[in-house]
Length: 247
Ligand SMILES: C[S@@+](CC[C@H](N)C(=O)[O-])C[C@H]1O[C@@H](n2cnc3c(N)ncnc32)[C@H](O)[C@@H]1O
Image (cartoon, protein in one colour):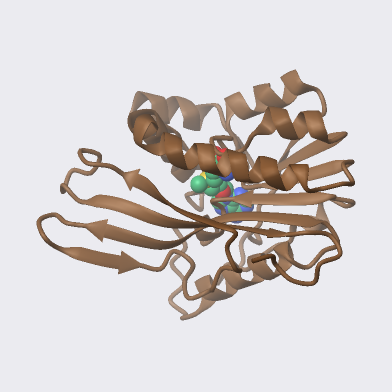
């Protein structure tokens, strides 16, 4: 609770990020990471390694854009900063430690920018391309499922699907390399024998995956109801000049 409050109090947030629940959600993720760090490590290491391999396959290295960079848990920021002239972190909320890391590295800018149009109902996608031009690679790790704002209550069907679909289409629409790591299924085990599955992408299909793994999001003991939550994760890459995602 204290960690969550501290994280929340020291964020830099874009307009709307606090009222829509995005800022609170990010503070909760940071607190959950501190509780579940050991269980999350294999997933975070695979994310970082995949992003690093995408960087290694990108020849032109002037500007890298990282969407949903937030707490920088799954982003190898020092390696990206060393490889590119400039790195732009795009998130509706930048926690203090991410802003300090950006300042320390010198060529990293933390840009507060919401990828969802502020005040629109139902919420709609807003492209980062309005704010940043000339990217050589765009990275989005564990972002897509987080785009529908937590407190949005619009009752119309389909807006979450449209929001995620538009974000994914935009990711693959430019001339730069695109590196996507995303959850594709959420499996809830228990309590007891029960098992249920949710679709974090709201019916949107992820591109072909070069790698797949599982993330123990809520390991045993994390949830009060005794359930465990495991996410299926896909890692996808599209190189400049290639019309389609690899794989
Ligand atoms: C699960 S976290 C991603 C983890 C991050 N890649 C890392 O390395 O720790 C999802 C991120 O998406 C961001 N996000 C959610 N809605 C957003 C929006 N409308 N615009 C920009 N970023 C948003 C959150 O602030 C959060 O930092």
